[in-house]
Amino acid sequence: MKTIYIRDIKAGEKIKSSFLVAEKNLAYSQKGAPYLSIRLRDKTGDMEGRVWDNVAALDPVFRKGDIIFVQGRAVSYRDAIQLSVLDIRRMEDAELDPWDYFPTCKGNVEEMFGALKGHAASVENPWLKKVLESVLNDGALAERLKRAPAAKGFHHAYLGGLLEHTLSMVQILDFLASHYPTANRDMLIAGGILHDIGKIEEFSYDRAIDYTTPGRLVGHIMMGVEMIDRMITAIDGFPEDLALELKHVMLAHHGELDFGSPKRPKTVEALIVHFVDDLDAKVMAFQEFIRNSGGDESEWTPFHRFFERFLYKGKAGS
Image (cartoon, rainbow, N blue to C red; front, side):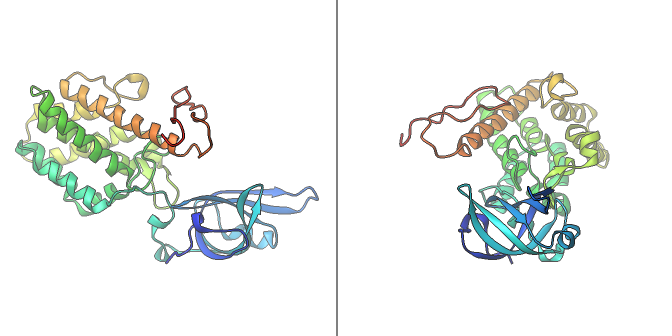
């Protein structure tokens, strides 16, 4: 069991602990001696590591994406903590709890999943309820939904991020259903729960968070629609028009063709789901960038390349 985390490591300490290898590069010193430059990660953050000795023997032991047990000493270098690594052992899957090595959602996963199932249970349309039950009552699928990230880098890019994003969306959609009573609440809730379900297969997240080959070639929108289409086909008598509307919500949730959406929203429900998805993702991205921009005295973050602007943090102490 992992007991030492990066955020607690101080210069001068002897370290015996396990970390995810986020980056690994072979480099050479000014004298031409080889060394390994590695970036180590756990759920509390990242730190740089260096292997100065016994490089030829330790280099083949591990690669990027592995979780390794290291022995070394923490040193201070350029106002940051760096780990001087003396020995490395690659860890086996049976020894690992992935939640120790990746950033994770702050909420309780089981509680969030229970809340999501509660929203699904409130759906009155029996056909949509059957589809939602097919997803949420499938043990293996549900476990992946609890663990999957919502993205690799932009928003909710941590274990449990997809569940957190999905529940947040459904809570907003439930409110908007009462604000726009002509919109079909059941379709909004079902669309919110299912819109990103393909991400459980788009990403790999047992080690480093990355895209799977199907994720790169096909993408979560089509993968999700195919998944739900298989479930609908297994339900005898599922209304064809209802299936088309549900799949349209999923296909249109990115809103525009330029943003990877195969279809633009053509129903009120698809429009609402799209804007709520966009809102929740961007608000979280704003908040995460502000939170991670450092505690300096500036009222502004560094320039955000995606949003193409600086973000206002506010005055210190306000």
